Length: 72
Length: 212
Image (tube, rainbow over all chains, first blue to last red; front, side, top):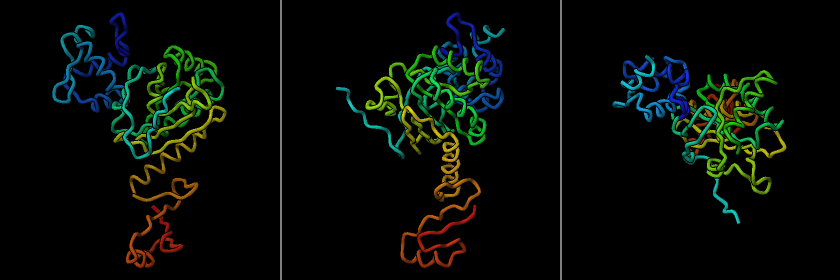
């Protein structure tokens, strides 16, 4: 996974995504807030979902307990 | 004998893929909603490709203003790509900000017909695929290994395609933004007669230009 290193640490852009996901947001909203291209946000969300750090609910993404642990 | 695969064509859906890139694993579907220039180069750490990468980076901000993303590709590893883009930054002072596909197994190159076996079986040619926000192929350009592309023409092509999209007009040879555009020719006799009364720059019933 690109935004999650093999040792479990996160890239800066992945952390930036997690930090804005305490409230559920669409990829488009995240892209605007963190000023990153939409394709990168979509790719990172896929990785973070696989790592159980975010979950998708009806097209919006929100941080999970696992994700909160990583950024706390 | 190697099987010859059919190449994607203009007007057809762009073949979907998932690939390892310098910006992580990307899928074509990640680009839905924006235009995409998918281009291949023969190899990392080669001089013509280096000039092309610097030139592509040179138009990247202009492309972004037009909702266009860039995605490079060659049959090299992601570590080679990372080393090369770092080298370009160190030696040429240009930071490459767009992702580059590491297509070591030639999967994407084969899907898009980027390898010209008559020229090289191990390198991709200089191919350019313009893919629209609905992921349809809108233009294809090929250059041989020996000849660097005219990157300015790629920006001009994007402007022409987006002008067509917005105004439903065609663009003449060597058109540049601000130039007159071609009004689509009428396709009935009645409309041809009507066309001659329109306030366009009319050379004949089938050949009219207008400003936009």
